[in-house]
Image (cartoon, rainbow, N blue to C red):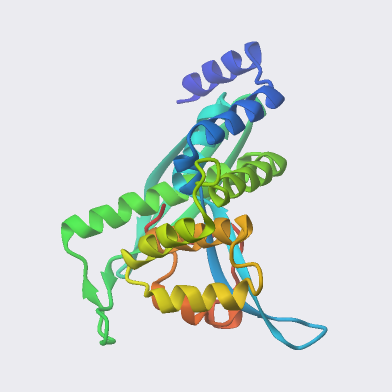
Length: 262
């Protein structure tokens, strides 16, 4: 392994990345494939108490999806990611992700805990996962651990600009094709319906979060992120639209959400 790392570092130093060119290529990819931009991020809603007014306001924990992190790593170059099972106890596996930047000579690690059981709805008794489901959960946990490690190593400016671009592209999807706000909203509602969210739930949430601005690109971009969060099992329909308080969900940070992922 040491020989392989040394060879990778020598290659990286002989062919250094052009960060501006990498970023330009990343943005071009998002513009070329807006359907990929739609799946490149998530937005998890929660309530936060404003310290000045004391009022409760809605905010979002937002981050890059697994597929987006893989694309970023691929474009960044001179780097590698990997994951493995680092250990286990009676309740869960500890899955470790690693990111190596051979050019910068830096290494980053992240851990995701994958539970061996689940609690069926309406009960409080844990049930062991079947072998096939447990394997899928471990694979998903590995992908997220790998993602989290990679996002520690990629520069903040690159991640932030990539996220903003993806959300902006997703938010305006359909406009260039001449679709009306009503048509774009109908497609959004249909996508939520497939995940079990009712039209009333989604429209009430949009009306509360985006009063007087329910047809904006920002609304479409944010709600696509909420959709992705539900699809990726970062949250549920009930949690997303009931919106628990941040204190009830625990300390939440961008890109630090465990579980089966996008």
